[in-house]
Length: 485
Image (cartoon, rainbow, N blue to C red; front, top):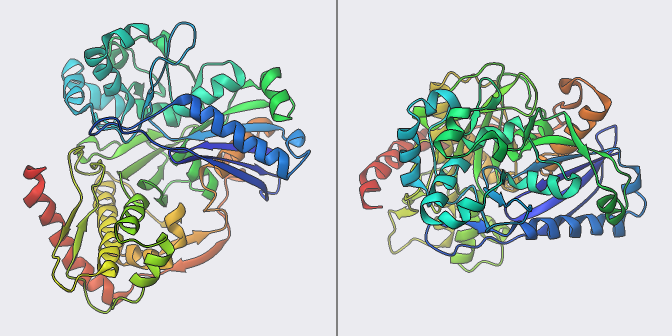
């Protein structure tokens, strides 16, 4: 048995897999985000630990004895978050999260300090990444910066509490802007540009390597043996391992809080000017490219509350009654928390365009689904411009439950979308697979296989035709209003 822990933004999910990839048990605990000022997004790391322990406790109660059979643990988590510890390993301040946009000025400052930043890291500096957050901290909270002894990514703070080790994996660390992504090593130049050293960083491991083992205290609390803990991966790389996207030309589309278009590569293929993320995969000698939409399924949640529906499903039912044989008059820019790919604009805002006296809740809901799809089309274009080759696209994440949204996205992207078993479990499933690879020393491609296809959604020819025209309007709309953000 193998335990996968995924520390997300909205909650922690824990699962147990057996050697046949069967999901034996799962539990979760919710988290909330604090926004103390415009563009700020923070969480208290202590809440991550309490939520993880709560989910484990649920597993103990619902599946007594199962945790005792676990052989290893794999970790996955939200990327980029700056978790800051002092010399006594105490938390200095709330963690600054991946969707925090406060450090735009520091991105420019950082690239000026290290002119080779993009060639070293393979990425353009963005406020979401970890490094600019530390440059911001030194300027705005110098007393807190002076206390920093270790900077950890969110899942790696859990690892520290579980094992006592300061360790991280390549895929998550690639999102800090301190990693030489091609060499898979910390960059002294990038650290120096932030007035940090390698001493402030955790030790690096490949995603399938063992980083330590549970302490006796945590093992006793969780009802487990002192099992090995494997490095794991950032949530997207672990999600890829979970659905078997580990070979070149395979891709997945994640419809979570944010939206991700992820392509596996056997080579390092950066395109920083297109705001494409080029990171290490959680599988050794493998990289991946990624375009990121900061607000995806979160847009659907937002418009559901805005229109007064009880839940997303109720709104989607109304949207399904729209006439999809013709285009909607409403277009939505889904930039509720700024945008990464391709605009790299933390100040971008959400926009409804084309409202009239006949616009109702269903029309707004439809526009949101289509707007997110157009944002994915932006991402697909820059991925292809960067040399990505895409053979098939698997859909994962909570938004994957909507066939209607799948039909819209397939028609906008002009390619079929594949749905597989296990896709709704996502990164936790991949984390458990990585744990298995780590302790059983198996080839990654033997374990990280594609799940059974449950559905394939093809593009609709009629929708393809009018979406091609609407997409042109969508792109022009952003260009015409961006100066007002």
